[in-house]
Length: 128
Image (cartoon, rainbow, N blue to C red):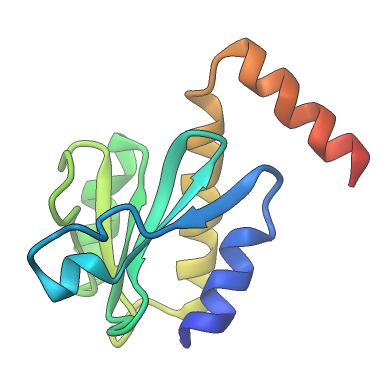
């Protein structure tokens, strides 16, 4: 998976935007972390240069099953391991599954928005 296609997919969701929030990091790797948000909630991040894996929100009840099924699914790098997973792009996880997990991550982030934020998001969706 290349970063341009992955970025376009992540930005295809209503209210999605991206940013490089770690620009002042002392680590080159961390400075290149591209974070995808829905309004103010993170739903995915990936190193835009290495494009080696992405971190995604995940329903806690699915994490064990995904980790058992795919070698390329691991605990969320630098994140709460109960709610985040890391998915390696060069692994046994099919691209279709990666995209499905991104969509589910987006949906989990939307579910954590306030009612007011969800109303704003609904307005954006209806304008599209």
